[in-house]
Length: 90
Image (tube, rainbow, N blue to C red; front, side, top):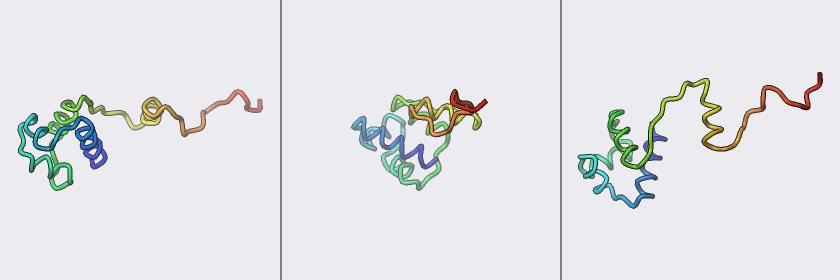
């Protein structure tokens, strides 16, 4: 969860939104946004989803076995060796 919150904080900063402005749009006081970003409170999933959507992001659940493929799509690089190769000895 911490990685998600850090990402959301960075998106908020990149959009030049103060904690106060962000909180107002979400219906929370600035102090609550601060607690979330510092890890001082454990927000509900619905709150995190609202935060992400306000920042033009979307939370997606990915089956664990598909995670390597999704990471390749996101990062554009493959750190795993392919299961087959044209150069393999027959």
